[in-house]
Amino acid sequence: MFSITVNAIGNILAKQGIIAFNVANLNTKGYKEIDLNNKKHKIAMTSDNNQNNVNLTKQIVYSNMNLIDLKANVAVLKSQNKMLGSLINLKI
Image (cartoon, rainbow, N blue to C red):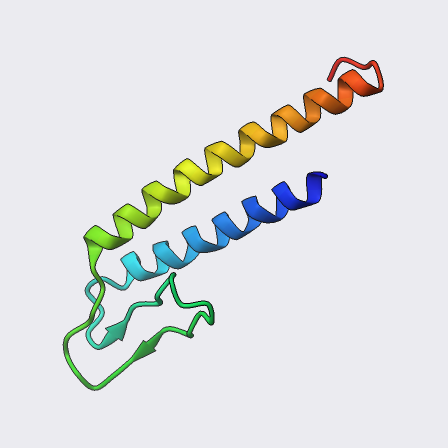
């Protein structure tokens, strides 16, 4: 029961790491952002082209969506914890 929620939180944190990596490379010449919507996360790439394709607005939106997802999953985890405590008659 808890493993699904814990895995979801782990995935959210992994996505946040990718967002942070993209933002950190905002001014790196030739950097190609890692697309969170791509199911097969590509390794960050650079090219000889001096421009990069990091869209800061999109990264902020992704970060905010991750925060909402994280809060929801933490609330689920707390509820699961409370229900389990009630089932075995313990206060957690």
